[in-house]
Length: 328
Image (tube, rainbow, N blue to C red; front, top):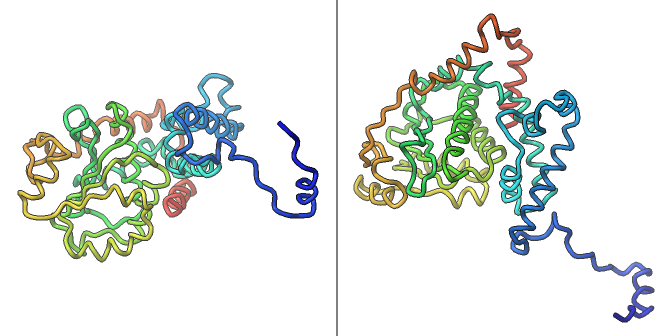
């Protein structure tokens, strides 16, 4: 190639704007990245994030992997990093910031030990089945995704921190359920039958719930089906709508009309055997809190037994959880 004319470099030296070099990998638009480049970027993100956890890594003395050091329930693997990159359109800087904020939030909130430390609170919130994950071995959408169900009419407390802790608990269960399928995403069914001002969550709780799902469980939601949402919900939706990420908003499906019309819409996405009868399906599933929580109750009791128990969480620890919920 011929050298650039001297006049070009001299004009550049006089302060005229110079063209920036092409995007480095972490800034290149997603549309210009092939699968190999995306994976390379995910591996780079993983390396950089794990390198930023030196104190935790030092505690292991090589006995565990870096992923487990960060959070035993949250592996910082390539698949995880790909989700955070997709959520930030493959901008490495933004994805790294988001993932590091999730790791900090999980530690502050105590997500990894939520069952061992806060099971009585979770048990109270989960008593009515206001939110639960259907058993993925029997109930999935048409493409095999796990299903999360929410029902406002079954709201049994107005405890903000309790509701957020319960939501996080259910999201962790949804992650585990998705891990038993061929999909890393789940679908959300919100049944608005019986919705009223009495059982509607406060705006503060709605924002915290939305924030936790969007910021700390990115690229996990496939679609959210809002079934039979009444006009009363429209006002609440308008209030919360500015806080909903545009990508998340596109995943929302309003299911309205007569029972037969709603059934027809849902049948496009779910086998009728995965839908409860109140939603037009044929499922015989009935939520039972004792059965649903049995394994985690055993975990809690084992952690609290004299052989394994450590000092109970202090008041300062409870305050830390509350602060983390507020920031989520």
